Length: 223
Image (cartoon, rainbow, N blue to C red):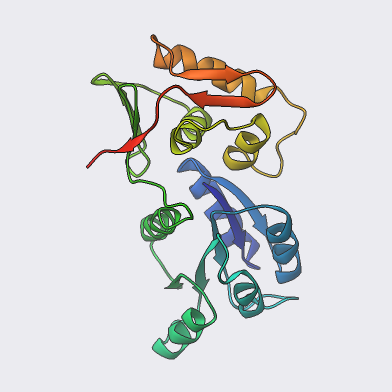
């Protein structure tokens, strides 16, 4: 998932970003409302973690701006009374978590919001004997565990979620990496190459020349 953190406490924002990256998410950070608005206007984020009290453009204004779109918003704020929560949800927030909070709970809420994206992402993805569980961060092929790096896992997750549709290198770069990624790098191609090796034969990832990559069979939900 691609995440935007809009939080003016820089130490907290950076700590959250590090933690979420360890969970395999691509994370951008904005330390004020104006920067957050600018980033959200040019990048499609799955989830925005949003503080209400921000310098510049307020968190409330940002939330109202994004309400009704494909991006899900979780407000993360010290304003934790019932009245505050009701007001935040009324602005269009999809979830509301008061500070202080437990990091595992934040991760769980972000993943839950990601599953409510448009279209919704299934809880478990499967194709050609490969089973990927985003919440457990596991990949299994034909009963054997496949050990992937965070980026390899992210690429496979995006490709499986596409259900056989072609995903361009540019989209993979946007969904799996972050704003610091070099758009001219070969990192996507190299990551797909190592991913193929780890998944083994028969291969399930095809290269569509001039377009991108796709998995060979449609994915479905495992329950």
